[in-house]
Length: 563
Image (cartoon, rainbow, N blue to C red; front, top):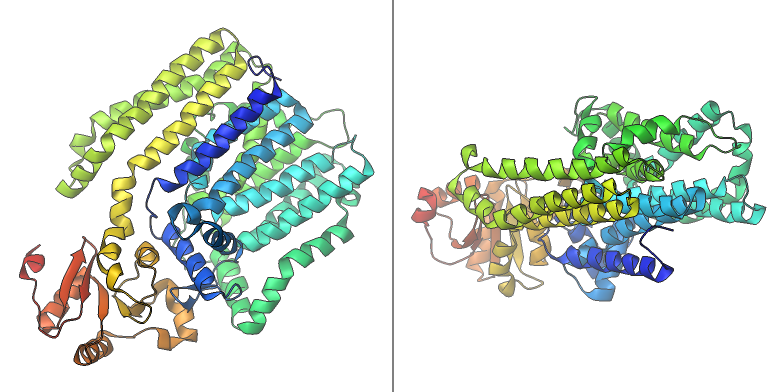
């Protein structure tokens, strides 16, 4: 298959190493709020309560997303216990699954070398690698859409048998159902629109008859619909909130405050695809050329990329993770470019990686001019060794890749650059850990967790610390705070406290009764409570919040107030 992999054993060894390393790195960082903590906590509550239908955050109804991610994380908790890597395990599995699917599809459609190239490229793209280690929903929907894309590509080949086409199309329909359960209607809207555009542009009018629509729809409905029915029966308010507020309003209105310019994703794709960016324009241009066959796989990949980028560029809600579904298609087109590539093209990824490494080292040398606070400077100083190693890896691998490109050793170039780019992403994410640990609030949670029992009242005043709740292993009572909990609190107002006056009364009642209680208080609110003489004792603090416990004597932390 390649000029250095002499047997399947060597290829399988590479796959095993990739899988093991991808799982191992899941446990080297704290859960960074808000997303990582939010979805880890939702799954924890699902696992602890045994309610796999009504999704909740902090014990409050939370219907912004479908349940697949939480289901899979809860399964991970059941199998391996509750923890950070278990919370990220589904993301890691999705990232690995996407890489292997792209490699298999590339081999089936374009040959073994393209499959190896495409898998290596996707496994080392900056955003795909990072998203595979970060606990959000984006990699889940990207991976399930990849199931649909890859199975569709395989099923629609001209030479497949009728049974093969049927089976692969059923896999495609199952992928669509899982995409719907991953993040909602985009899991259906995007593939349907792409197929419609392909039908118009390609002239392949028979493609609709090859989709096995009746069997596929039956399978799709059997997988996707039951949860939506049951959750709506138990929570009649869910359908309107989920389909109108979280789909229609998010796409067309600016109320989620995530808008960006039309070129938002076009700019992001530059760092997102490092170090393979130079190959992408070539792949996109070549994808428009027709081949002598009824089915045009490269054209389908091109439409997939262009439409998804256009769709999210038009949306009023933009986040970096939304573009993840285009990366598998980009990797396949880039893999095709590399097959039989000239020395000039082989040099491009190596040059890109080398340039990235040099630019990074220059940037690190100028950090002292940023005027950081003493705290941020100290945290960055602890991260600096890993960042230096990360950019050094890019420089060394870029130079090595150039060397092998000059000798036309394409597979060696791809492997060296891919391993280095993957390592760079992991080292960079590990370097963020000092900041991530601070943001997660794990130290504050650990300061009070030994004293928190199932019946202990824990309040969260003026804030909701997403990751801290997970580390505490205990829901909190929000005080004078709604934000993303607002919909659930409207349904169950008894789960929160509307204002500070009510909180003061509850707090003093708890003290009078000698009940153990704690509060996580936003710094500004804490200063006001000190002025009120509220009985409390500081247990831990950071620059955002103060954790206090109840005491029967007024406590004033003048040193904290001066800070």
